[in-house]
Image 1 (cartoon, one colour):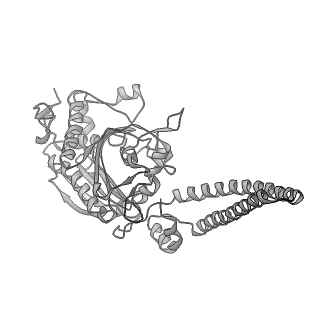
Image 2: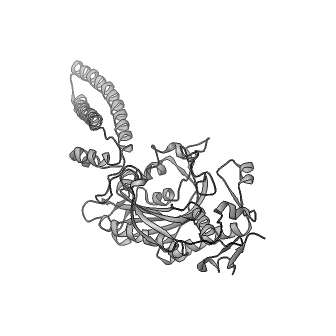
Image 3: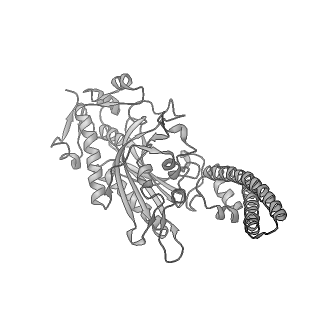
Length: 422
């Protein structure tokens, strides 16, 4: 959420910034809602003051006739005050809902553009493999040994779920363990979090109210399955005041993620690229505002280290204005190479939210005078299913086996190659 005072004082600048996203910030609607709230607030305070004065006068009045009149006046003011407070509550809700629908301000260095086609490549790393044989995609490789099974998942649940078996399931587990261990070595504290969260938690990170259709909601209560571990991790410090010497606070968690993928039907339907349930290792930072840009770079490099150590070819891009997420001020995407598609696909998004989330969650930093809002940063380190798919495709052999990256061999119990065709 944006600072309402910042909005009041910089309407045209904010409107111009948000226009780069393709978001139409209705200045007049904001002015109207803000004015209504302010007028009702003034009226409420005025009536409350009159009520207080009358209460004192009634207590001191000796003349019964005059006292009765003042009691009558006090009753009328009390009725009016109750009505105006109800109107003020509604006005505050309307204004807050309007503010919740406004995306974050973009950083100055975010390139302008309308879609992912306008994202800017910063650099590429790794060697794209060349094959002298007809390659298989990751689904075909997994199905050689029934390691990836979609028919069983449809019976159990529905489409866009998957059952992993044998060596493929083991590789999936090895990846999560390796990622966690690496990030812990890099200074992140491992956290285990709930997979169900309340409405306030999702509002705090920006998923609600705008993206409710993308969530899985529990039917009998106000709880939701997490779309990412960012939500429970970030809300650990909701309504808390942090000490400066604690920062940065670095957390890592491995969780399943649940997304309805509303509006994406017909897109990435083959394989395990886009699922309703997938696993991810998430990195979250709570940082001082002065350090947030440097900490975003650190977090991105920590995510990149996994790709480098797995010897997977990838590229780093900065998202353009039209492709930057609702709550993000700036986002770097890491995209891994998929030989079967002959393209790079997102495997991690690393974002700086500045104080957009912390204002919603009221996460502050203790200062000698006024406390300030902290900045939050998060990114995938990495999406496990997509990493698994990239390994299967980039490390495949003509015989139908897959070479295990060296850093995963111990996690695989010494297995150096998956012989999937047997």
